[in-house]
Each structure stands twice: as structure tokens, then as C-alpha cells.
Image (cartoon, rainbow, N blue to C red; front, side, top):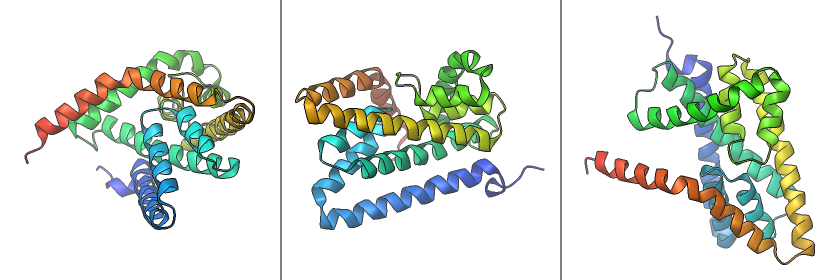
Length: 220
């Protein structure tokens, strides 16, 4: 007999992601009344992470005067939130708990990316996931890293500890790297802009396709 959704680990992760999202929305809403410009930046940081640019999110915070601690904490929070959704969504769609077509297509794309990297990481286990998530490369990051952990049948604690520590380490490195450049070189704005453009280009076709399919499937 199939377990109810919230009786599964992935269902509880989905719930955790929903709670984290609700807390984020409430916090940004409250913050918007006291400092709208800062709230707007934090919202754009979130969007930047959604399209896969960790460096872009951290760069936005640094360029707009957020402290290193705030920058690291907020970006880490956002990445954890995203992983809760993507990991649980991947597992639940794989096991047919979720049968929403566009989610399954999105998870299939993540599976392809994860499979391309799986063989390189398999023999290194936990440290392999940690280094993969920490590495500043286009295909790396906590989303794909956590899915590779699932494919390798690593336990949830090992997968998420490697993913979380890799994310935190990368955020710290990016934050202080950007801060160092920002203090010494005015070119940081152009470097940051180039990073955002490079990250966005591969996703433009997918974003356009997703919007078109969503509109097509909207009964209203």
C-alpha cells in the first residue's frame, strides 16, 4: 500500500520547502514596508538563484551594500529552499506521486544533467558531492548535486550534509571574493553583469518554452 504523501521523507521535504517559501514571502513583505529597495534586491537575488546563478545572487547583494553575513545567510537560505523543492519533486515524480506533466519534463532535464556527472562523482561518494556542489561551474550546484546523491543511493543525511556544506563553502568563497574585487576594482560591476548574461543565455529558450506551454495549458 502506498504511503500518504506527508508520510514520505520527500513529502515532508516538500512541506519544509513550502514553509521556507512562506517565511520568505512574509519576511520580504514586511521588509518591503521598511526598506522597499532592499526588499526588491533580495527578491531579484531569489530570481537569480532560480535560474541557477549563485554568483549572480551573491554579487547582487555585495554590489548593493549587504554585509557578508547577511549575504551568505540569505543566499544559503534561498538555495536550501530551492533544493527542498527540486529534490522532493524529482523523487516524487520518479516514484509517480507527482504526475504533473511540466514538472516531470523539468525533472527529466535535471536527470539528464545529473546522469552526465554521476560517473565522475560515484567513486568519491560524499566528498565528490561536496566538491561538485562547491565548484563554480555552470552544471554544478546543490540542485544537481542532491539529485546525483539520490541516484547514487546515498542516504538523505549524507546527501544533504554534503550539499549544504558545499553550498555554504561556495557562498563564503564567492562572497569574500566579490567583496575583495569590489573594494579594489570598479570593474566588478561589469564582471558581475557578464556572469549574469552568461548564466541566462542557455536558459532563455527553456524559459520562453515554459511560458508558452504554461499559457497554452491555462484554461483561463
